[in-house]
Structure formats: C-alpha cells, structure tokens
Image: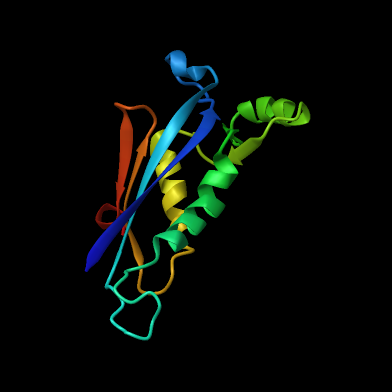
Length: 148
C-alpha cells in the first residue's frame, strides 16, 4: 500500500456563532490543505497510469471541484445559527456565501472535506489523511483510522 499527498491552498472566511474570543468576528484565512490517499500502484504495462496509485491530476480535479473552487473567496456560515441572517444579507449584497450545517471551525471543515472527497475517489483508492492549516502554526488533522 502506498500513500500519495497533494497540497492545495484557498482563501476562505468564516464566522463562528457564540464563540467567546476575538474569532467571533468574521475573518478569513489562507488555508493550506494536505490530501493523502492510499492504494496499490497499477501494475499493467498497457495502462497509461502504470506505476501510479492514482494520477495526481485526478486528485487535483476532485479536490478543486469539491472544495477549492467552491470555498475559495467565500464565507462559511452556520445555517443552523442566527448567523444565517448575516449570510442572507451578505448574499443579497453580492458576496459568495456557503451555508453549512455545522460551526465552520477547522475541525468541522475537515469532516466536511473528508466526506466530499471520499465520495468521489475511484475504486481501490481511499482517503488516508487530511491536514488543514488555518495559519502557519495552527492546523487540524483527520486520520481515516480514527473515523471508521
């Protein structure tokens, strides 16, 4: 079994309902996302992907379409909180708002990212690990073995 990793970056804002620190105010981050998948390298001389677990380009397409292109330069708002009204107001003023059913912390974003990526991976390939940096020094991790 081999693990391969691709790294992505995106800019996203969030607002945390009922948080008791300065991050209760809407703010953004330059997120850095590490996506690690695992599988067995293809062993078929006739296959154009011979020797690969999966083409890095395929991982790029999945993560960009499911996460980066959707969340980049958007604000994540918990639609189950009173912040829904804030999101509606921002949307009416032309801003890109992503409504989620959770508090948009780094931790909960990892659960959402994992679910979106896992549903799009090809047969024989599984999501092994995610790391999401909110800042250079602060990040969350998701491990497949902890989430079965």
